[in-house]
Length: 322
Ligand code: AMP
Ligand code: MG
Image 1 (cartoon, rainbow, N blue to C red):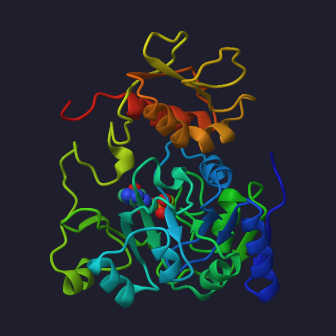
Image 2: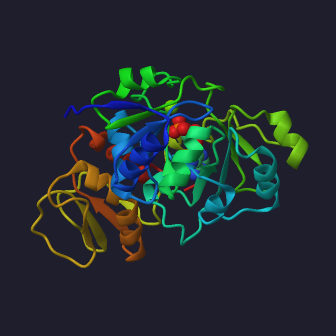
């Protein structure tokens, strides 16, 4: 479906319009000092699902949550001393911190792609800052381009890639850094560099000591999205299930007349965006029923269905060490 994409220069009216769209569950592209981001209200499942749909991303990777200030980030994740120090020194700036998610964060489970951590960042770009402050909510944003394309550093790049798919691009010239943020994982004892970027390893090391480089070991790849089994419920997962066996829970999709206590429907109307928005919450809920296995009905391999099936295949893949 094609729609008009307006490019609006950074101005009080432009920022207000972009913030209102975000609060209404729409997507808005906006500049940061790294690259242009495709933003959505990070507390809105449907809006976050729309990011993957709009980018045509075949996988659910966890997204970076952009915050107006460190206080906003502290309400979403648990900071430790290392995070305190890095945030004080490097924020606002191109450093993303992966930290344990607070149970009451209110964030969509889709921003974490099912993990118990969230990547947070406070961008330095004044337009981004004004937009985040005006929105008053955390904003999930990957780069504002179709999947597989190069990250955009001007509003024109965004228009080329996503024109006709989003209502608004907030424009403010060229991105200063033009390279994605550094992603640092602080969920373990040893800080690990998940992605090199705008903040250097030396800078980080000077503040918190040695930083582990990601292993080249294919069993422990850089991005959690690359792991064959990375988000897996406790229960086993059986794909393309036509029937439900004893002891199994059922995750279904589309019109389904079956009824059961251990049954959840990703979308009764067969809407893949709704299904994506429900995926992680439903998997968790079915896992909590104590079922041995979650049987999953077939989901069409088209549009967001590709990302949903990718994630489900990972959930069903043989578990490392199992
Ligand atoms: P992009 O979507 O292109 O901005 O990339 C986001 C990067 O942050 C990817 O490399 C993700 O794997 C990484 N990332 C985001 N959230 C998390 C998380 N919770 N745990 C680990 N890595 C994350
Ligand atoms: Mg990207």
